[in-house]
Length: 568
Image 1 (cartoon, rainbow, N blue to C red):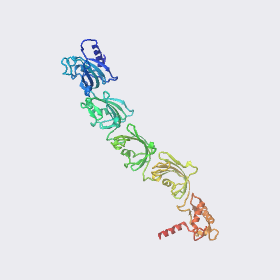
Image 2 (cartoon, rainbow, N blue to C red):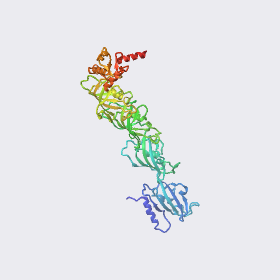
Image 3 (cartoon, rainbow, N blue to C red):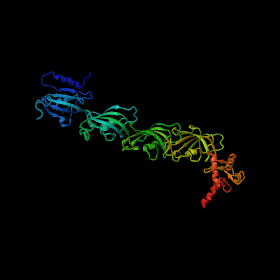
Image 4 (cartoon, helix red, strand yellow):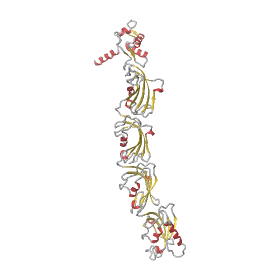
């Protein structure tokens, strides 16, 4: 047969007392406030803490724990209390309030108690129960919330960071990490905590919330605890509402999860490389503290050289361009016990979601791969040649930057004339007309640390090149070169009408004939008439509009003469 709770039996028994008009035979109980939730009732052998006011039938007060400023603590059912109180406290809940009437024979009887309690006095107690515990009690753990994913739980010797609200069993708050604005940080199982908390935190996940209730002998015991802003009475059971934010072990290394790599990986990052990557950074509980995406700019740094925290320095080695991964960094490989200002708490585990955009080494050269080459290739491009080519330029993550196909005509430059970045100039050398190449250009041969319009700083560039055609050029500083030996008597050959002088028209006709007959070459890509005029002006040394034999000199002769003068 299922029996009703003790508190109900007491109510039934004590209600019957009011049926008699004679002297009280037992205690009378009035449960005038019963909490909605009562997980535990006082039983024989329990320790209790309660406040009370004691008075006589006429209302005169003879004792009060409130007046003394601290509650009464005692053990129920072993004769340490007056018999009536031993009976009257049974079945009480924490935060219950009772009025207990104790007849003389269950109080101090015919003798009374000194000058305070007269003989044969009926005593009236107004009791507020604050705490109940038993020497057999253990730590009570109630999980309030647990994340769906829990890859790791707290173990002895771990270091944890958590928030908590601490209350007595009656709900009186005595401490809160939230009110101080920072977590409580400590080792587990190293006697840094009260035993009940050490036990209650074991097995928790980051993000988990627990209610942890511990008896006094697993908390602050008979002495209690009192510091500024915190007051825990002696023999107090404690209740903590705990939210675990972080955990690690001093022996932890970095961990890499959720790694996704491209299908092709021809090169992996090593110490000394310069890397560009995007990241989102959070604490272990998911609180964000930094993001390169929010700045719309990659984080750029050397790796393996101490420019970044040790954990990231290690994690960024051995990666492929395009890799994505999650890196978890313990605090001793991050910002340690001090953290960073108000951004990163001390002893915080950090989580980085990383996307590698590109990397290079300062010693890298241009990497050229030929994707198509015509069967017939009798000549290739070299310095001073005029080349016409199509290109697509992108970052290594595939972001398109520029394309010659967006314009009407192919790109046209003279190789070696410093008209394009060095890496592209190099990649265009040695090509056949119709050849296609892929060129990877490191930033020191591209747009450098500062980048350019539309090009991020320190970016490795990917070029798809197709050489449309090219014209052989002339050396730098020349407007015309001989492809065969020049005429033995150049002036006589140039003086077409044999009158001993060569005006501009005659000079122009002669030069054009040399070009048409494959004997000489004008500088390609420029206005031929303007270049011929410049050549004429250079030879017309007295500026009279005509060249005579004494004025005419080849540039090679002029250069040799200049060297002789410099030597003198």
